[in-house]
Length: 165
Image 1 (spheres, rainbow, N blue to C red):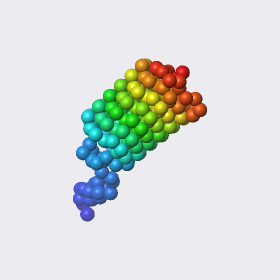
Image 2: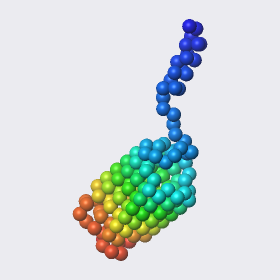
Image 3: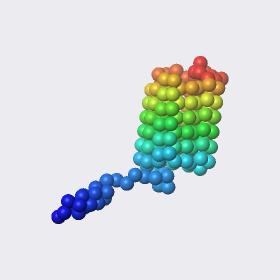
């Protein structure tokens, strides 16, 4: 076999044996890879995206009520003005994610990494932050009434705006 033909055969074999990367048109399912995709304004209630890769993806004004995004990698993902009441972000990596003005009432962020995330003006009433990493997270004007704080014991007082009182 000639070296050129061998190289072509090897390349063809490798392309068949490696998994194809998902694109933005792929269906919502656990462990999907959506990078730099836009789902702005989409109705995605109860969607199952556990373990998904969502880096730099936008869900602005999307409806994600009761969605499962646990263990998702949402680095720099935008949830601006999204509605995600009762959604699960448990164990998710959400560094620098933007939840500005999002409705996240009753959402769970147990053991999530939210360092440097923006929660400006978000509704986080009754959310659960047990074990979450919050270093540098911006809670300006966010409603934290009834939220369970990172120690798992402390519950923020009613009218806790911008910080857990």
